[in-house]
Amino acid sequence: MASFSSIIDGTRLAAGNLADFATGLVSPSLRLGVTGLSRAGKTVFITAVVNALLKGGRFPAFEALSGGRITRCYLEPQPDDTLPRFEFESHANALSGDNRHWPESTRRISQLRITVEYVPSGLLARTLGGGRLHIDIVDYPGEWLLDLPLLRTSYAEWSAATVRASRSAPRRAHAAAWHDMLAALAPSMPADEAMAIKAAGLFTAYLARCRADDVALSSLPPGRFLMPGDYQGSPLLAFAPLDIAPDAVLQKGTLGALMERRYQSYVATIVKPFFFDHFARLDRQVILVDALSALNAGAFAVRDLEQTLTAILACFRQGANSPLSALFGRRIDRVLFAATKADLLHHTSHDRLENILRLLVAQAMDRASCQGAGIDVAALSAIRATREARVRQKGETLDCIAGIPLGGETIGETYFDGHTEAAVFPGDLPKDANKALDGSLEGKLRFLRFRPPAARDGAWPHIRLDRTLEFLLGDRFK
Ligand code: GDP
Image 1 (cartoon, rainbow, N blue to C red):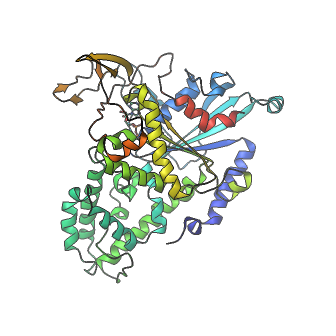
Image 2: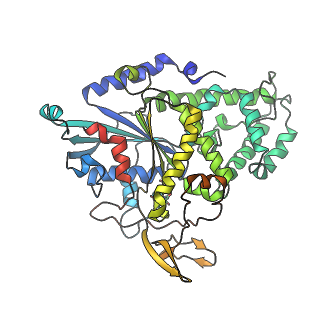
């Protein structure tokens, strides 16, 4: 297997970074990647961040904003003409008014440029005049990030690993239909398009099942099978693993060779351009994690999440962000892992959630040997849909959360109509983070989807979004 550095196309990277670097000399810019698996909270997070910068709100720990040093913020046309724009206005509209609802989730990559004018905090910088920073927020599905290891994996290696994983619990239980077909497919059969399409369909259904709430697995490449973006129905996605050895050699004209060619095209046409054109140009990265769903689904889901975080960390190349390193593509200097939807827990569990994620990431860091980039962990709610309430039940006082559950949500026999407020005991996270990793929380947490809150003076309530902004952007306003 080749290492990441050996597959880096140095010239291409240097050219892309040189262009960014030259633009950065005129007016400094920061490319902030926001990723996370489907429904982790990317759209809500970006909408809340942009809204905070444009409209302000209560953000005490984000010093540039709370200290009044941010003097003006506005959206500008984005620099990359080939990328769709992040639809901030329609997402903010969805979250506003009496008919407010959660916006449509991320399905493909998009971008938004916000320009911030500020008074620098340093005396020297202040004497030199006001500062201006372009922040380019790039939103992309985390499923695509998890494809990056495919750059150094052959079709036979990927096939063998994927089939092996699908034969162990809990995946095996969801693979029956695809396994039946797999057993009937010999790699030496003549190439057959219809067969390849059928196998891809069954394989995709298996991946989707593993991703469902009750299984909640994270690491399910190839990412475009679950999150196809503009490749829905494309022949590039018409392949599937075969039951072969990692060093198998596939003969021309066979089904095996057809699958292998498609896999190689997928890597060359989809994964590689994503790496060079988008991922390798980021300066900072937030990875949003729906840790609560994994904890609720059980030990397998948590272990799988940990492996996923390890794979993600391995994607970040070492190195701090100096002008020289920017030229050579070593640019990501800050990475934040953030557990979202902390408002689904009482505040007494927020630090615990952060500690659990810290433990998962620490274990991942040991393996990924990721030096250089500053890595931090947070538990946050970008838009807080609940408040807190104490409820007495059977002589016991419970720390609950209250809000309006979305219509159709249920707890046991109770059905919510979408208008009535309810107080719910969501469960507690353990004080000792290690306890959360052994599956002992399985089925013990109770999460409902709540209606988004009304904005006050244009700002939504949040949990710890200010700390997050301070970590991601604070130093750039010094
Ligand atoms: P994406 O697929 O990563 O873009 O996920 P979204 O941002 O669309 O979020 C998916 C869903 O998670 C939303 O529709 C909300 O129901 C929920 N959600 C996201 N962020 C929050 C939050 O801060 N609090 C609560 N209570 N729910 C959230």
